[in-house]
Length: 134
Image (cartoon, rainbow, N blue to C red; front, side, top):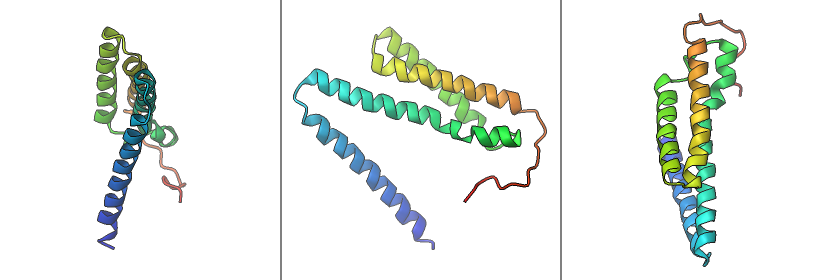
């Protein structure tokens, strides 16, 4: 049992490096540099949007329990601040692959913070249903 977790993490790390290698090898096959820039930019934008939206997966749990104990405040705050800074950086440099996904990340960060402040001081409602469904 103790060996299962490190082996799983090594497997996930190998999968991430494999995916990066596939993206690098695939992008190097594109000879047109403008098309290569668009390809890598779209992949980067998609991964950045999914990273910014991942804390929102807990929204249903927060709304159902009316508690933010499962949504860390500093993660929401740092997502908002990082996305806002890079949104402004992308605007100043006129780079659509930076300001579009980070603009979406800024909006998602605002949603997370609004949800946090809305449910922060409310008493937790205990529910009979399990929090994590198998």
